[in-house]
Image (cartoon, rainbow, N blue to C red; front, side, top):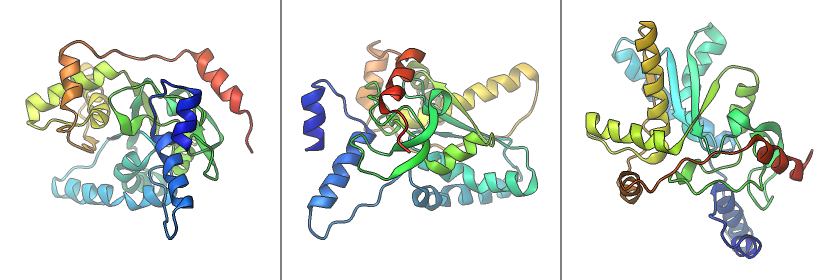
Amino acid sequence: MTGKDILTKYPNHPGSLGTAISEAIELATTTPNCRYTLGSVLNHVSLHQTIIGLEAEKQMKMAGEYPDVVIGCFGGGSNFSGISFPFMRHKILEGKKTRFVAAEPASCPKLTRGKFQYDFGDEAGYTPLLPMFTLGHNFTPANIHAGGLRYHGAGTIVSQLMKDGLMEAVDIPQLDTFKAGCLFAQTEGIIPAPESSHAIAAAISEANKCKETGEEKVILFNLSGHGLIDMASYDKYFSGDLVNYSLEDEDIAENLEKIGSLA
């Protein structure tokens, strides 16, 4: 009913990760003996995903290197948390100077342009209130071809790290991500998912900065998925049918004003 209610109110609503969470919660609460554990935004998922970063830490040690920059694409936070948290502990406990960069879509910029406040983790407001960077649980993301990143909020641990200045974020336009994905496919032989291409674009940007300054840096990014089921998106890119989406500050402020203070 959640999805039907949203479509009744907004017939052209493209759906989002927040919509999917609302429907999953509704299904779990109306189905006998069914349980649902939220992913991505909640802390247990972020910590579960750190197996990625722990493995990367061992791989870096085998290579005799340590990252100066760690990059992950960012939707709700599990992918970014997974690659970054194991290295983040060394920054917090040992004073390592590693930078941590979350690469989010320019069309859904909760970390770069959102507000830190209590909000729901889903569109219908079924979840507990969470302290997070958010564009508002009622935010409708543009229909970009990176479905996993079309989410209004950020995980609570990541949000606090962002608030405390221990990490940073960049927002990547859609066309830049596909350009980066194509370059990666041509040079590495792997077709990356549009979500992952946000991290690739951020890594390329960091590498180009090093070219300009003459610095040598070890850049670690997480290739979170292949794009073999996203070939139609690449076809649209090559056909010139994809566009960038931008948000006005006034629209973001108006959306946040609608939900007001929830705590």
